[in-house]
Each structure stands twice: as C-alpha cells, then as structure tokens.
Length: 405
Image (cartoon, rainbow, N blue to C red):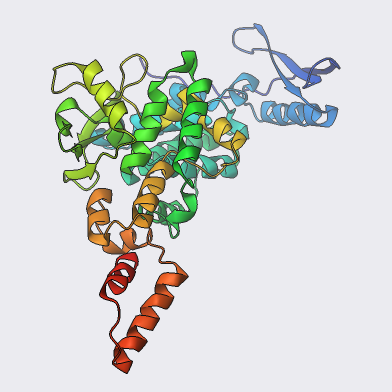
C-alpha cells in the first residue's frame, strides 16, 4: 500500500500561564489544541523562571502551529525525535555506515543532548558536547560518526520546519581533536601536584560513588601511577602483570563500539611495558588475589564486573562535581595520564624511556613533559665555561646536570 502523506494543518491553540510562587520555575506555560485527525484534545506544558520566558515559549509553539507543526513534536526531546525519524535521517547512506552512526547516536549524542528539546539544541550545546567527547578520549572516527548522525537528524528537523537552521554544523573540532591527541601544548599544567592530592581525589570519588565502591579509587591511583589511559586500565588481565619484577605489559584497551564497550589493541597498535611503583603494588596484589588463577580475568572492573570507560568512571563517581569541590575544575580523567608522565619526567626518567612508557609515536610529544629547572641550566653554563677555560668540571655534577636536562 502506498504511503499517503497528510499535509500539516494549522491548528488553533488555547494558552495560559500559571504562576506557582512555591516552585523554583514558578511560571508554567501550557498550550492546548484539538488534533485535526483524531479529534483528541491534547496539551503540552513547560515551566520557566519568568513570565516573559513562559510567554516566549508559548509564542514559539504558536508560530510553529501556524506553520502546521504539531506542538507535541516541536517539544519532543532530541532522543525521542531522533529515534522516531532515524530512518529518514539515514536515507542515502551506504549500509556499512549505519552501525557506526547508530553507535554514535546511542553512545554519545543521546547521553549528551538527548534530553534537550529539538528547538533548544543550540550551536553552543553541540560545541560543548563535541569537545566533551574529545576530552573523554573518544577516537577521531567515533567523533566524526557521532557528529555526522546528529547533523542528519537536525537536518530532518529543518525539513520538518521545527527549526530554521541546523545547529550541528560545527567547524574547527578536527583541530581541537588533533591538539588533544598530541597531549596538548602544555600537559604539565594539567597534572596534579603530588601523591597526597591524588589519594585525596581517589577517596572523594569513592565517597560519592554508589555504595562507596572502592574499586574506583584503585582505578584512579593505578591510572596516575602508570600514566595509562582509563581504557587501558580497564583492559588489564592477570596475565599482563609480572608480580616478580612488577611490570605491566599493556596489550589492549576498552573502547565504545556498536552494542557497548569492547576490548581492542592499544592506541599505537603495539604492546608496551610499564613499571609498577611501590605505591600501587598492594592494590595490584590484592586485585590479583581477588581475580584468582584465571589468566584472562580482569583486574579492574565496575561494581558489577563490567568494563570501565572514562565516561563510566565520570558518571559513577560524579567526577565533575568532585573535582570542582576540590578546586581542580579543569581536571579530566585523561589528566591522570598527564599527571603520571609529569611525575616521571620530574623524577629523572630518561626521555627515551618515558616515550616507551607513554607509548608516544613522536619524541616531540614526550618532550612536552620535560621541565629543566633554571639551576640545572645555570650549572650547564658553568660547566661549559669551565671546559673552555681549561679547568676540569666535576664529572658527577655534569652527569647530574645532563640527566636533569
């Protein structure tokens, strides 16, 4: 049977604004109308802090109704509208792109923007969501797919007359992504100052989590001490740990994928080894004991045994609220990695070793963590002067200076 499109019919609305002084949003705006097809009486309402804002909401729905747009549709959350119109939004795409687009919609777009009504999705909201995905370590192709499906859904909203322009057509995010991928220009500025601050953070996150799950604190301490990504911490198996020499061989990471979180190879596609310092050995030993003899058992999981991602850690521990309360508003989960690499650089770990631990493809990326102090530079100058004047320079002092550089 052929589809018969019913042209939109402008419907008259009856409106009212109710003042409720005992509510934080004290003005409730409401519109009512009779559906021209079903003859059912329908209504939608919205609370606003001022009478003017309530009236603006009514005016917007009235203008939409005049154009034949169902008032209920124009007040739908993005998640509801997108799910209902996904088939239209995906038209013309090759079948192989459907799964990654739908995964981007489910895993990133809906959690970030799905609760917002379609007309309220602004360019700024999309900007912040995209940069949030980048900050959470989402891969380039995943960001691209997530933004692409959002653009298509919002384009359908334009076609439906719900909005006048597509707010999802943001630019410049690729440069922001590559900046984040390069570990930022000054990653040292993102590091926590010391171990005591780190443990305070870990304890605060545990305290805010459901039933105060101690595993979140272990994840945070382990990630910073090893300068690892959260996805790599999630991928640790019993067989990856050498408890004799206290070495962790990083072989995999957990990443979002269609259907949920999956394990795949490391970001650089190569295994690397990281030393386990004394501060985290008790945690690792305890996790090995709890995991039992199975070499494929995970060391770090959520409270129900599931995989961990940076988004899971954020939501489970109320990360954003905790770091703000502690005075570290800028701190992201990925900054635990910056913290570990900064501490290792300050401890004198040679550059080529630090690069291996970090898994950096470029030595220039690793060099950003180095911070030779002015005394070391001054000592280097004095050593050169002594050499040129013929006076012997203390070899140990020179060696120490070179190590510091």
